Image (cartoon, rainbow, N blue to C red):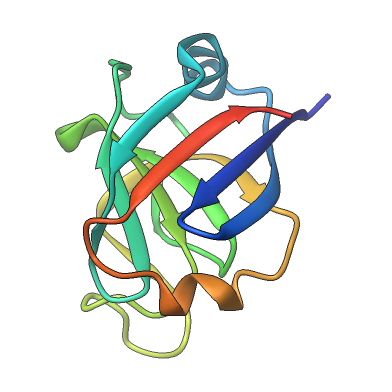
Length: 124
């Protein structure tokens, strides 16, 4: 059963859910998390206090609105459009990531968020 969370970046507030994976459970246990986000194309990522290995279902090709955990950087990732690694309109991670959930609201407002904006993730 998915776990409801809220992601806030500046004045953008999004409903989202985490899946039932072990990585998502570790993220849920670490909430609330607040960090300065970095932009990589149309992806926001930031380090979180979670350590997890690459999951069996890890992949680089993502969908708009997907949430993931990037093991090399211990990072939470929010995909909302193409990244520098994309070959088309779909997001592509820098390397394989663990899919951990998805944004339920429209991610379009994230396109106006500046690099370095503070991101807060909390239970909904």
